[in-house]
Image 1 (cartoon, rainbow over the protein chains, first blue to last red):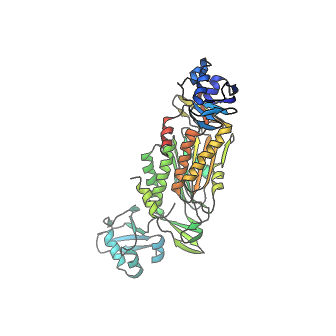
Image 2 (cartoon, each protein chain N blue to C red):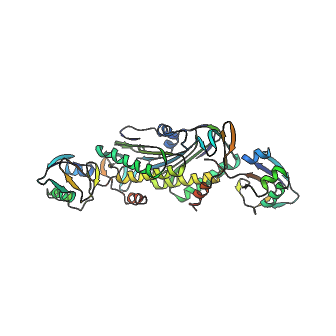
Length: 85
Length: 85
Length: 146
Length: 146
């Protein structure tokens, strides 16, 4: 399946990327599995997604949890805790 | 002693008076005694000050209670519960 | 800091005047003349006050708020006289570094103003004036701060 | 009801737009760019957001407030981009018949906005940008509504 990944704020800056198209072999996966795959890219990816940082995840613009499942065509966004207002 | 009486809102209207100079024989009295004297004037005075109505009293622009004492030269105001804002 | 006046006010001007480099939050309350009363459709109100006492009473309310919360500025404007539907009656605006102090202090000032400041409201319904009765709920609201 | 925009706003215009014959109370919150940060003097901020999600998230926050309180109108404006000291960042204005609903709903919306709406703030100190860390206190504030 192919999904769209989006990164915001500190994450966007550290990864030097705001979005990418991402293809997985499986037809579905959990947010936790996706985070592990991203962390496995190493270096800055590992530092952001190895569980040491507070990462919020939204699937199709709704907040998700580690056990939420990701499907083909989804937009999955990663960002730090919000600080607006 | 001579004091100044002030009346506001519903009281001012019902009594058809907004202030008056009032002379008492005593050199001091309590708010309660003063209310009784005003009620003793009869008719509308009695209906407002006989204790059946909620009357707020201020002495020299500070809220007073039934036991507060009134002295020569004081400004004593009578009014219903406030309804501004 | 406190004004009792006939003329209307601009909320934007009053709030802008409270802006200082350290101000992070400004909470404001505006009270308006409302059409609905318990006994009919209100077309206007008239506000009476006790000139010698009202200013003093509001200063005291604001001083109490300033003792309870770290405030950077407070503005209170209360109009008097004859006002028609949807006109602004009162403004309470409170500035602070953070929002919780501003929210709480503004609610506190309004609760005290509603029960302690000598203003009286007369509502006009079908051209006839009716003095408004004090609300039980306002006494309950003010008691939560003690 | 909800705007996410670069340009500034007039609090008076927004509050006046909420006035209806039954409106008795309008509570507004304005958040401003504040000079003081934990690690220096802020000269400006930059606000990033998630276009596809932020509007949706604010609509959801407002819908929750409307379920909890009898509101007559809600206006939320959040600015984005580069803002300097004392500039207005956010406006939340809530209209209702009585003041308690307006005060509570405005505080509720701000608490949720601060913890759930996807906005991120970068503070400029001596010309260098620092992403702001989320505040523990904001998580505590939002938890009081559950």
